[in-house]
Length: 203
Image (cartoon, rainbow, N blue to C red; front, side, top):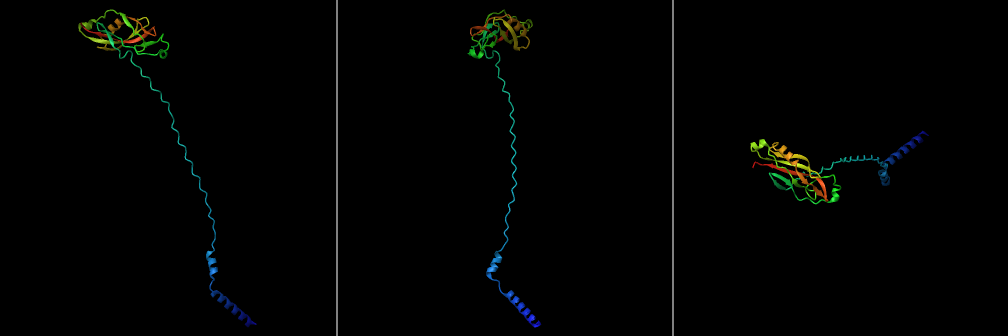
C-alpha cells in the first residue's frame, strides 16, 4: 500500500516536470504580449483666461475758443492836411451789410463801417506851448477822438506823443473845440471814433 502511494507521487512529479519543459505555444505567447491595461486619458479642464481690462478712455477737456482779434480804431487811414500840422483821417469806407450791423442808432462806429465819414467844419488855431516854442522843440501827438451824432468831440485819448507829454495838453484842448459834420450810416448820423494826428512845427 505504501509502495503504491510512493509510486503515484513519483509519477505525478515526473509529469509536472515534463510539463514545465514543454515550450509555450506561439498563440499563448502572443496573447500574453498583447495583453495590457487600457487607461483612459482624463483631460484636465483648462483654466479660463482672464479677460483683458478695458483701457480707460481719455477725458476730453473743453478748450475755450480763441478770442476774436480786434482792429485798432481808425488804423490804416490816410490823412488830409489842414495846415498848421493838423491832419484828419479820411479813408474810403468798407461796404458793410445793414443786416450785420443791426440797430446803429446808439452804436459807436469806426471809419471802416460808416457810409460817410465826419468832415471838419470849424477848428480854432493851434496854440504852440510857450516853453516848447522858446526852445524850438517840434513834435507830434496822435489822438483818438470820439465824434458824436451832433458833430461834437465827446472824448479825446492820447495814443502816442513825441516828445512824450510836451504837446499832449495843447493838442487835447485844441481838438475839443473842433466841430464836425457827423458821420452817417444808412442816411442817419452816428457816433464814431477816429484817429487824429496833430503836428507841432516851428515856422
